[in-house]
Length: 144
Length: 137
Image (cartoon, rainbow over all chains, first blue to last red; front, side, top):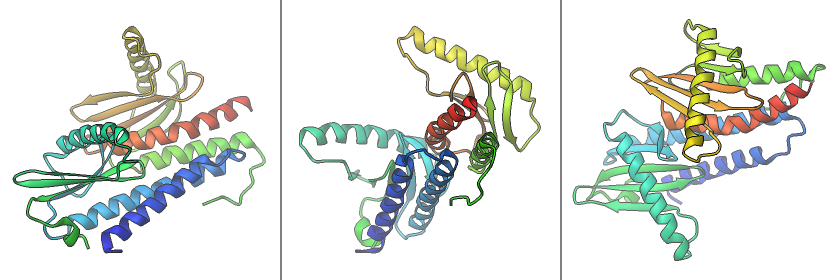
């Protein structure tokens, strides 16, 4: 497993732990609430940490995470940040519709390659991680 | 992290948890105030990092939420889950909790809207349970 895959696996684990914390029966609502909050902040902090690491990789132009098409974590201020969100939302919706008719299962990854740049969108728990880079960059290799 | 402290008064521990939730919301980048407003527009719990007229903000948030809910009903949207007001300097987000109580967040412009909205959406079910229990005690 290369570096980025292991980072995504860690995020997936934290997302699952958060979901499990949410599903616990609220016999003791105060402690359940505290635990859920802790798990959520561990997951979000890990997303922000990954975004901060990915942007430092040579060749990566932008990295951000979105929830329902709205920005959740970003590495640096970018003028296109809201446009990315709109593209993410549209792409995920289209992929989900196509995915269900083709029985692809839950959408895990979408890549849009343009003449100049490309954009990879990866689904991790409730969020979508977006990485943009020049078209010629091999993302799998720079993220390994 | 689970607390080992067992509160004798459940209402006191619920109150303290509500305060912890507001403190947690305040720790999000760009959030400058987090308040719980009752159905009459009175602020019952608040955390903020600037001077704020609590009576005015509480009443305004209730009025805005009420107006947005009515507008939604006029177009056949039955339940309003969140109202987001965007201004030059930031956002005000309000979400219903229980029995007319609202959770309102005031943010600066640099706040990440998706981050704040995600946190609000995830916090509301817990607050609903706490309030149901809080109001029953």
